[in-house]
Image (cartoon, rainbow over all chains, first blue to last red; front, side):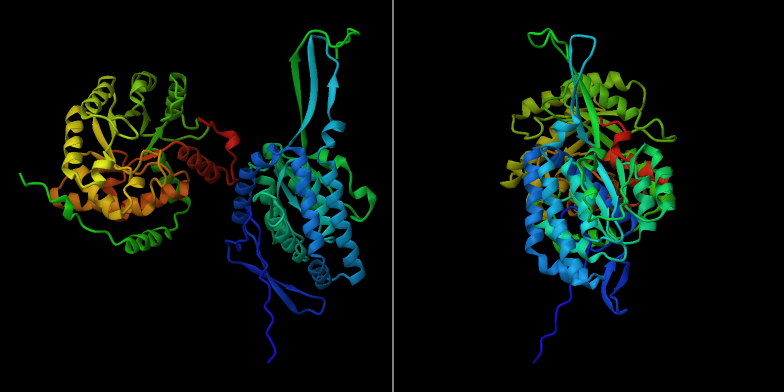
Length: 294
Length: 300
């Protein structure tokens, strides 16, 4: 007797849990041959709201961790991704990749996580400064995480693109809500399963699936979202996001890249985008024997 | 005058039935104008509370200001019903609130444990009332209750009620320590027959606090007492109600169990410290159409 295979239910990822969308809406995902391979959650604005609440709750804990510990956890995500290689390659093929391209994309995604894991405890040095001032103060500026970041993930590169936008946000101590690629959501949900088993506290990354045109305006208008990272394809989308986002002076970034495999697609300035500079004036007498006043 | 009932024969509670009734009531959907009206009503029912060892006069004055000015940017907001403080801060609160109409409630009777002599509890109560408290929140002796000494609990409540004079008395059952809904019902009956003006779930210091089944059980006790005596008694769930949604669900329970007459802050209160801010967020959302952030409203 042949066994009937168990199909996987793809759900969204909020606060470390895998709920279905509260809206009860789904959209069919088809493979290249036009066959339905899964029903995907069509997330609503309430799912997004719930995700923001989860993210806000996780922010203090995540940003308060030592940089070294964040680094360890990012590295752990890379380890978990490696362990699930076969599944990711199958799903990338299901959503249109060739086997060779899928393998390359997965390996680059793992390497990218390791790259940003390395940056966690280093970007602060290169973006900090000690500032000369005309008074007896030790004056220094350090970057601090912006807060809750909403992300519209790249539409074409469903795993590498996703990892490439999440990793720098996370490395900098931010928390995020990500809307996965509309037509290629499988890798994003399986990636959520990787996150759930990699010591990452619930709520630090939340992943929704659904329509960009429904969720992106919510990202822009939600008062508890501090920044939006957009990596989509339509100029009209980013224009409207910037206009709506002005309501609470959100930081809005256009991270669209033609090629997520290129070396330019990873750099510490992406971490720096989601940082705020805090300057401290610390009263002192002279520093050093030279009499220098920093 | 009719004699008091035998409290050892208080009605038993069908826990599964209560939970199902709560679940059914929680499916009510309240939207748009009704939601706004319900939320404003809930705001107006809040006893804004600070009961911490680290409380200071400054903290109490700050809270009193918040009680009177919940969010001035939003027009047509009510004030909260009362502020709830320790007896030592009653005078401070009274002065800060002036003639705003916001009442001052004070916990008394060796709150929150209630482990002291009746003499001390009476003096604690009188001190609060002398300082100007409009309402007194007392705790029952749970230890005596649990070992079946119901007349002790009854007499204590009656004595504190006498010491309250004109102040209204809220009796805290501390349901988190009573273990069963049967006990909650029995304690409610004792408190009401002993003269409580309000019965209240919890001190807020013990978990679980005001769960929906406990609140419904107490509301039903109030209803039965009203049928029996014709006297209305108020209800105050306290602790654990921090979301606007939970507040609306409580109002639904009150409306369906006791009727519209109880939908007034003379008869129903929420004991809460963070509920007001969540309701404000929801009201702002209704007013602007945008989900809100606590960054834009005062924390205390």
